[in-house]
Image 1 (cartoon, rainbow, N blue to C red):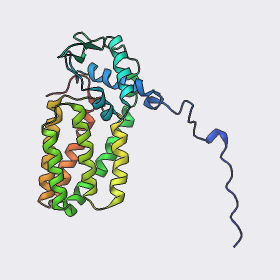
Image 2: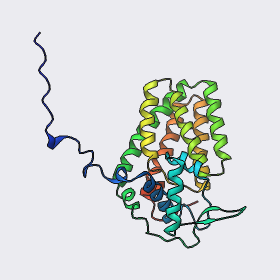
Image 3: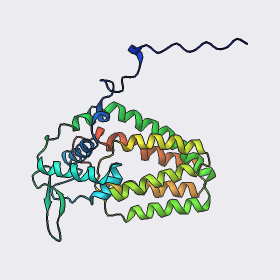
Image 4: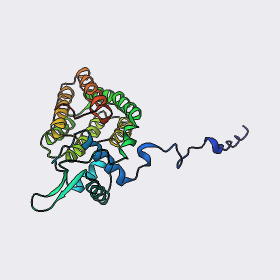
Length: 254
């Protein structure tokens, strides 16, 4: 057999432009600007309302997958821009300003412009989540079901959206593990993290309502009912088309 000919070099005109216009949207924002944009959008959409307190910077950092110093700098800039305010003293902290300045953070446009991309990621998550739910209903162990219940119960009692977000991620990754198919978790985690790049702070009332679907999903898995599990998973993800910022024009219904 003759040796394989070397691959032809890729012309410059067809190489990915890693630093050019093709790298658009949120991927062109700095870490500080992503923090500013995501919190500012939550305020503009009334997901965070005047007077609402923000979690400590360390919790926000975990939820938004950035460093704590990045969060602190982002919050400082948002306070200067009139979106947030800082209060000192025993009951102080960082809060949404009583009359927040809207439209001051131009970086929110990068998120709004990503609407079609977000809908695509939601659909890919829907496809994977239904498969994960079906397989988990067939394969989950009693120990895994108990662990899923523990996560859902803890989400019922979280006090901040940042804490809820961290537990939600662990819940869904454990759900993927319950399929007993390593590729399922690997592929699911990729899509999950893509979607989390667009995560905004949400009111706790909304998050607790979403968590009721987690409980319904666990019940279906514990009952070894794949059809019921898939139905819950479908509803749980499909609603993101309306409940994420791409489907919101004002505050969501509580």
